[in-house]
Length: 319
Image (cartoon, rainbow, N blue to C red; front, side):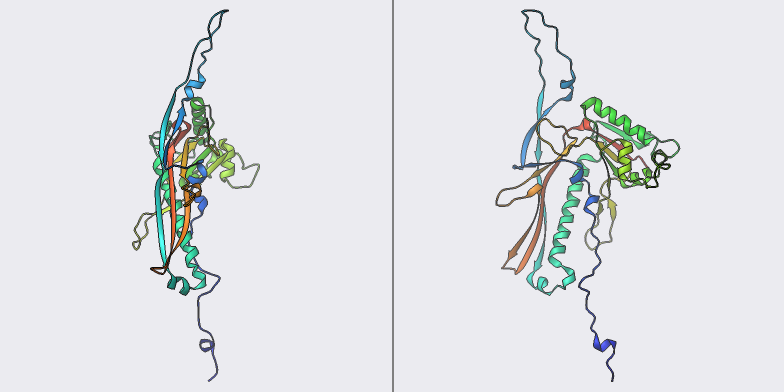
């Protein structure tokens, strides 16, 4: 009997190929849209000044021998509290040793847990920032022309009006526009944007061109996805941030004394013995009793609206 294919080859998993579905970290906007303020304590307070106090004209004429007119400003304070969220996966030494190379069990477990922290941070952002009744101004799709009405809507005019209103109240110009995914898809085909480039460029309308036309530093599209079903059940996929809404804010790259930001992510950095850089950490811990390795990821942040007048929410602006 001559050797054949089945007797000369035993099928085994490829070592350099596998199929996986990792979300793009750039689709989660919470860590990129807001400044991160690292803090050494889980809770504390911060001072807050009032913009209107710095726009009054109270200097008066002063005659010879008279005192100057007195004035002042008010200061309040608010608090933050960084809740701690954590998740782990235990891997037995036997499983780690027996796993095929392409499974990369330990690395993929760490990647899985890191994605969980991205989702958690995004949900904290959604609860704090993504909705009506939070910011200084709301634009309601139910009472205005929606942006997928290409005949009657004027999204550039809407954003310009909101930018003016925010600047008038805070002296700051909004610099970031966050778009739900459906809003982005509608705007990239909007005649008001397409007409600006159709005779000068063959480039499609992307976030860079949108930012230039809306007069902001950055347009960011929120595309993070949440499966709200429990493990083992049929997936129930949805976008973490309402895809039919948008948010316009002033958000500096960093915060410090006398800086204004629409919202801030306070990140508790932990202790020297258990550091948590930027509020997030992944640790590996061996347990000889159970002969296993624990991969654990932890996030400790508080997403706070620190300047409601520095933002405007645009709700349900496309169908």
